Image (cartoon, rainbow, N blue to C red; front, side):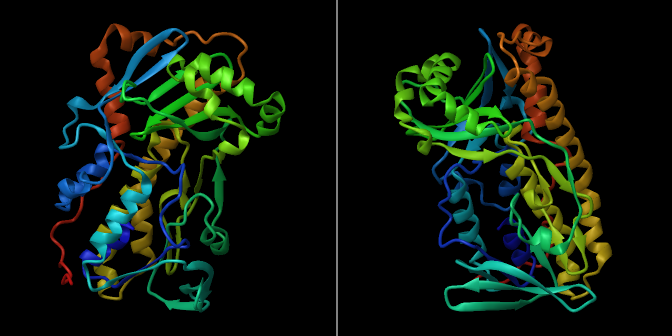
Length: 392
């Protein structure tokens, strides 16, 4: 949706296909980082965006054993937004769609399920999508594959995937939130378990981290075992764990970390989770996808307008975004190996690592993780000097 908005703004005719009838998918990521908010600010949409329902996270705190620390403090970032906006993804998508529809050369079709890429032998020429009205055949200079970690475009294109592995899955669920509860997200590491809770206003969106492929073992132990573990990990939520009546109230997020070796072929480019599936560590997936979209629009707008798009243009997008992708995934994999695996495989209380002890002793150090999480590596900026399409 971000790529569609930016390309339409630059004078390119754009069609976005959405599989579902609406954007209301629960348990999607909802962390809009300062890097993304800076892009929205560059588009002149900052104030309008923040009128949408959201909560603000000025700092991230973590609890390891009995020690609590501020892991990241965003108040010193060199950006207009010195916080993470926790906004339901359906609100974010609806906002972008509304802004994109202002341009006469933008079109969004809902309930359009892309099924098959079309090919003339020299490259991808478009796709066929299933809609309530029948098959929709689209011919295009470029198919931009933005269909996430379970991409249908990726296997059809035959692009090789490098699997980096993940030791965990996550059970997502809701717990009620009281007016007296803190605003900051909750992150707790205990004996064999990890619990996170994200403030969604009137409820907490919660994640109970389990070892990879261990769901049946967890279910066999019973829902009360999970409730007890949550209550021990987060005393704040101990009085409401009974709200999880059964495992039917939980949704499994299968965690993966992978990336395509090559993101493109003639007429096709993959970006976001479809090109590089991210771990939920740091909540950076949405923001890396947005960065990809900005880079793609900046690099491809002119050749798309001129109908001169070549494979070198697509390769330039990957060349710009791959280094940041590699670095972030390396950090995530190291965290998985050194922290997540150690916690999930332990029968003893985890001792706070030296880094956390230093954060407690020297709180100003929390500015550095904030910069890593909030801005990432190679943050993109909107190319402002482009022809602006005529708005409706």
